[in-house]
Length: 419
Ligand SMILES: [Zn+2]
Image (cartoon, rainbow, N blue to C red; front, side):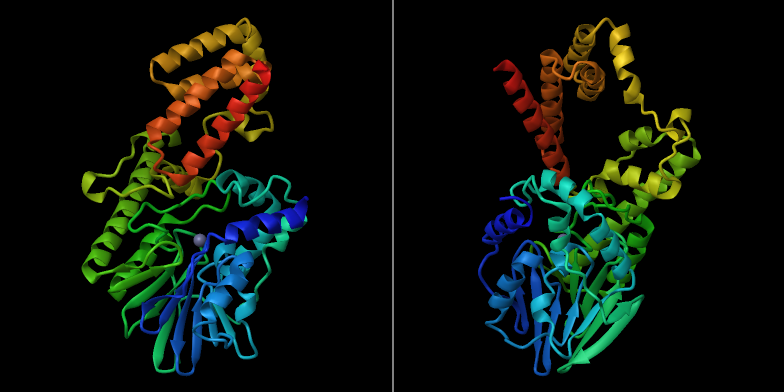
């Protein structure tokens, strides 16, 4: 099996992870859990659905929420264009359904669709077992049915249904420029999509290793101010658990806002002082009172995202960055000058002994460019990667998955060569 059938089979198997339900999170608010949750607010005049989950879990969610209603939704709000929120819209749409999304949703959806083969290749690293190795470009795009919203939100769009007021509020920043949240003012409940991520509170994912456009830190700060002013008493994200308690919510929202502002300002100061992005990635740390977990986004990657979000990819350090010859193109020459891979590996081992795994990794990349199957170099690479994973504590999902992916590949290569 290859291409679409294999992808379908794999995702259908993964679908079994979706748990039962529906879960009642308020008297009239229901949740179907999955890779991305679907929320349904039931009113006497019809239902409002907030996020629709992944394409291949769409029927599952519809079935689960069928215990509440068999009607199509009157309104569907898509909090952003990511597939785990917007690709399951099909079963909810009827004759008078209004689909609401951010004004930037169409262009975000378009670039995600165009880059689907690229992103599928990367997603395989972070979600192994969900996306098989042989997914074709056609299959990766087939998972992204294109949605045409009826109503685009630039600032706020409010509507009333069955006596409940809904406000769809633009909250760009953390998970993309096309993020909206849904506010129920009479109940002080805010549906946040991915605006705050799966764990609350956490450092935002300003850049995703899956390969997406950089998210704006200053947009995020503005959106957080907007959300703080609402004074929510309950947050309902599309991943993870709802959060309750006005005081807890407020203090954590303020901490996230202040932490992002602190890092943003430190990056800007550093750029103006002529410091390099690597220095800033190394040196910028949050003060203890603003500390945030980094399970999804990583602070040092946020530093780089802010730097490159403002100044782009040319760091003004090496002329060679302007031309299509990479430093790695001369690694082979360096290896020859060093007298082969052996002396480089010895130097890399000394870095490992000195607890400098990244220095070791840089050196063995030079050795491996000239001698890809050099066992000593591969063993140093393996140890360096394992050390990085250990030093990281495995806190950050994307870092953990990337390092694990490289560790597995290196181990496999060593095993093949030793056979
Ligand atoms: Zn999501």
